[in-house]
Image (tube, rainbow, N blue to C red; front, side, top):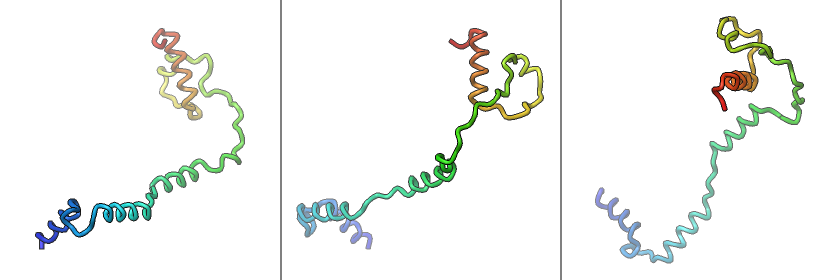
Length: 110
């Protein structure tokens, strides 16, 4: 049986051995590629989940600017001197701005 399997595979690779001509094999290949269309199911699911996560952005109201969590006169040493948490979570952009300002003052960021 293994011999028969090997022979059938070798005939597909070398069309001159088999009963189909090169033109017939090309036609079979074109017919099979035209009938199958690749559908990326993972991408479809990802887009659906993303839409659920983001929600309907047209209904979201623009956020009003709010007071920063970190005071304008807070220093880096003030943050390191205490282990008390902030009263509210500090937004990442605010923390980045704070650190960049500190680094500029100390000459670490140019």
